[in-house]
Image 1 (cartoon, rainbow, N blue to C red):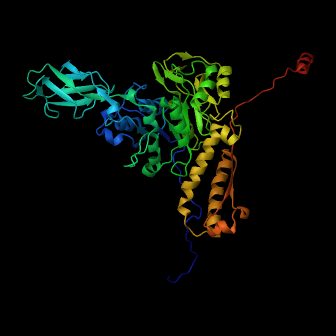
Image 2 (image 1 turned 60 degrees about the vertical axis):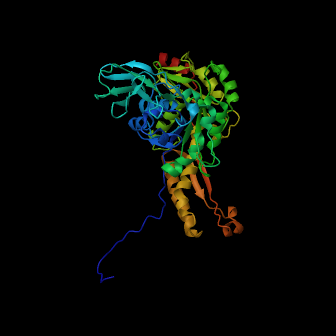
Length: 487
């Protein structure tokens, strides 16, 4: 150090630990997509794929407006086109390598129009089984005699090139296989782990989201498939101890199909039949429609929940209930309109199920988790409170994992307490929580635990409950009437 004369300053690194934040409402959606439209279908099958925009999602998974068959396409549209939120993580289970997930295409002789043969089928697989022939005995070669291009509606165009083999061709004979999305079962959505290879499928792939993408799942969905009791149970089970530590919530469709609840008074029975009673679950009935296009309730509620988080500094303390959705009707699965007034919608809420109600525009309506009315504990009863508690726990893990294996001294304890309380004071100042405080109590840290390398903190988290019931007592004041006439 050289000779100094004067006043000097220096800066030290901030002693508080900066929180590591993921996306609070990150949706992980398991379903089916027309992956035949992608360059490598196997690369986007039973793997987590993230998309930050509609364009990215469609490029990754393909797109079809047949949402009943391609549920990931429904989620793509609900998030990026209807509500306008993202990102989303998609897990496609419709596997072209699975013989049960494909079937023979109709194909046959197709007349060329301006040199193009349009195959009016969705899901056509351009693989070893696909063939284009000039006649029964003469095959054309892909890339030499023709190219293929998928249309925006999922159908296929075969563009005939000008070659010696195609001279004079006015029609072609097309054969091959196509995806069979209706063959996907609840078992495919639930998934499994191959004992010999360790390969994971379906909901088992959710485990890969954090190690692969560095983001913790916030909301798990299986649109339309979640009306199945087995899928509903698997979704609820996956919300606990993800990657051995993290928590999530899930959104479940209460069946409003041919065998489900067709009127509001049937919702309770149907909910119980599906086993949708978990504290980490949010149940929704029925579906929603925009014109003739039908969306599952879970897709709409998931998008609306994620958007609500984004509108509130990526903090999941605000309920998505009473937030608008640009739908034109609440409908059953077959499109039959459901007209609920507030009294009927409240009855659905009393079953622990959210719904859609038209109050100067359609809104998601319902604050309770599926555990209600079985539990009235505020941390488990209110959807927004449950989500905040889980998110706070995940954030604590992500933020302080860097401190694991540090010396368990007073400096470490003070660093965690100070950092977390600075963050908590911000939540209190913003009106997010009534209390958000962490303390280190000697009574909870025995000598045995400390020698064993275990440190325990005690955290008090009290997010505000939703103002679900606002009452105004109105009274007629006769004295005011007398005073007004005698003044």
